Image (cartoon, rainbow over all chains, first blue to last red; front, top):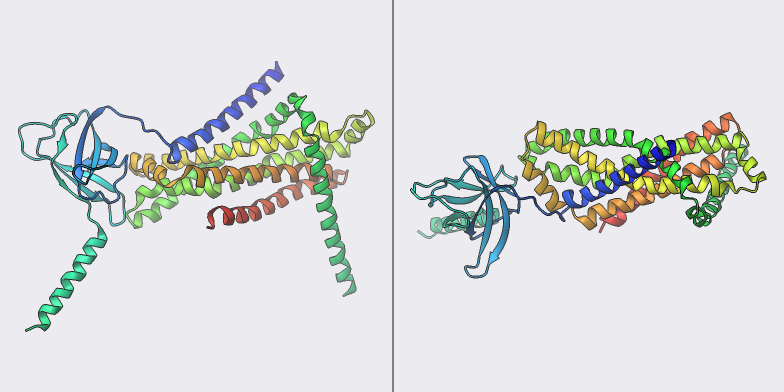
Length: 159
Length: 259
């Protein structure tokens, strides 16, 4: 009887160790498959998604309402197509809802922000959000700033 | 002056003598591994005392290390508004460094010292010589199963340590401090690489398990067979394992992540 207990404990120990390795591989590293929650899928096209990732949050007024489920490059429009799932309870988004990519904090993670429009009709599963605003790319901002500064200087010197 | 040189030379010779004996001893242990396959029961008993009984300290320490990491990193990361990176920081530091190293140090303290004391006492009470008298090879019967059990347990224990630590960081970060659940896991998953981080961490633990097991059984087998000798051997096991693990960790890290 005693020896059986020892064997069972060792078996459980080895199983726990392998389960921990499995968890590290599946849940911690980039090998994971994602669990789907109940909700409906929407898509949106963006010029540039910046650092948006699969599983990034989708928010409305700062409240998380869903998650990004997939990101791909759309060859037809040469834009990035973002698929995201919105929780089933938020099922009354107007048709003219806007989707924008924002950054949480200065260096934080990027997320998808939705702003409701005023349309009477609501978005259904599989619909595409037409009004989008791309991520702000800091290099472009700096480039624009330098460019405008340079033209300013030129304008100052010419007269 | 001459006495100083004398002591220096003596300690140098003792060091090399012990290293040589340890290496020969290791070959003897490795050579007797195939014989162990015929008697897996010996291994199971040792896996219990080396692995299962270490679970308590490993899980509790892992949980605490993860929780402290979560707390500390949150305070610093929130200065930059980058709290969402918490998962990534906790997972990377656990999987790459803290998991293997801290688990190995705890393992040396919990299991290595016990192995040394057990074998040393067997030697001091002349059980080992008794076995030899009965034509039972003590290396095959006593040392090999303990070494193999340490070698097998160490990677499993370190994996448990890291996994529990990540859960501890999750508990503090997401549960108490309000980091976003999905961002915690997604940032972690996007930055932790299966091959580069997890696999290299496992390789580290395999090396540490080998070294910790080797030192523990050798110190026990080589102990001066009296009370004081056994106590010294036990101390040496913990100290030498700590040195070896920390030194090897630097070398392995430089090899794996240096590029």
